[in-house]
Length: 319
Image (cartoon, rainbow, N blue to C red; front, side, top):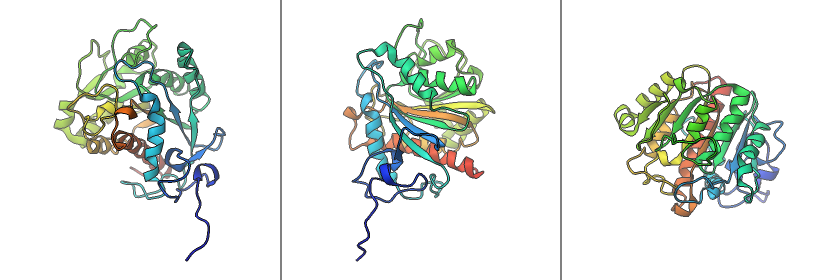
């Protein structure tokens, strides 16, 4: 019998690099057991939560999304990750910086607070991966990323286009694309929306790869279309969990039947490693409507797949 103490609470005491091996049901629940820290100087990637759902138009509860995704992420801790079969943390330092701060009594201050705090993290050498939160949070995140990287290609997995009318005064998760276009944050000629299965008043020149096209092309074909559209230059990935069919992501605020399966979405993402992504978010996880962490596990898997892409890029390998 080995009486040596088993390391636990890697989020506080473990090494910055490498996976941890504590029980999945115990310990501090940082994202994939990464170190909890506000000191991000050594980080290649910072994972961050924005527990904001005050811009939702249907079912609230996405404020609990970051906590649910972190909880679900413990099952991915310590093992080689599929499909790379590698430890993404072997040479890539990832820190969980906790959550964004804003005062719920002063909601109209929230966009600027999100943007300013994101600006303190984003740099040419460091990526920000954000756990939402409703989809409105992507607007201040795009502002922060565009300030560092310039105009961005937007790769948006979503059931909705989020292009409803906005005169610049609304706080809505259904208008963030409208505002991003108006502010010149995204290059519409290089942007694409994937999995759309609703109608909206505008497309602003953004390519729409709707759900029927995704089904016809399959993951390999869809990924090829995305890569062709984006081309070279910086890009930002935003994944609304309602891009998935409610069978695979019931815990979301505005579910729409007929969406992508988890396998299709993950297989498509796995083929996007050639895109120069500079940041990403996963949004609209709404735990009050989830069951058995199905939606949170899907969201965590999306981030895990993205981190594998970044790790492969650092190794000079094709993911």
